[in-house]
Length: 168
Image (cartoon, rainbow, N blue to C red; front, side):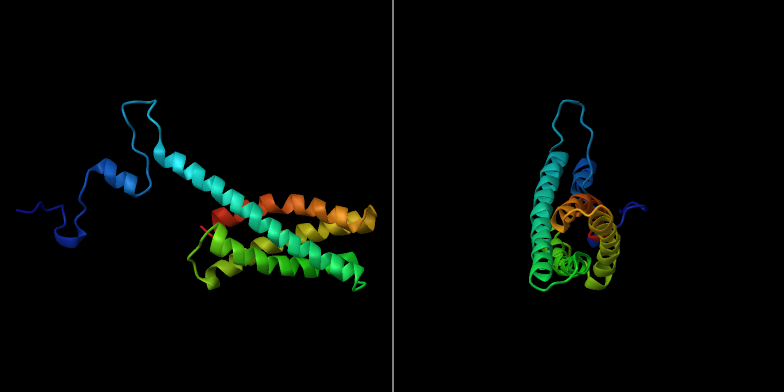
């Protein structure tokens, strides 16, 4: 005879509580405090792999940005701020594609992910614009060095926001 509080059929949950908790990604306390937490170990390894992929994807996007910037300044005669903004757009396309498909392997829909990604990018574009303007126009530092400074400031902000919000 079925218990009043337990569902029967395909909706019934079977297995021990620890195995169910583990299958949902949780940690089960053991009586041995020195026992390794395999789930968190795998999670840390996965986080390291994701971070390495993020660095590779970001380097690829930054390379496409810098190549576009250099070509437009040196061959196209554009001012560094304008050329950097165009390069930023090129890097954006490269970055979104690699992050969505490879870094975060998100199955989310573009209509949800893209506006979030673009919000994060808008913050990055603002930061990039401020750094390039201050560096080239106010401090009169060579545009390539200034862009490298911007490349150092933007990725941390983007990684945190994209991993916690955009592609979660």
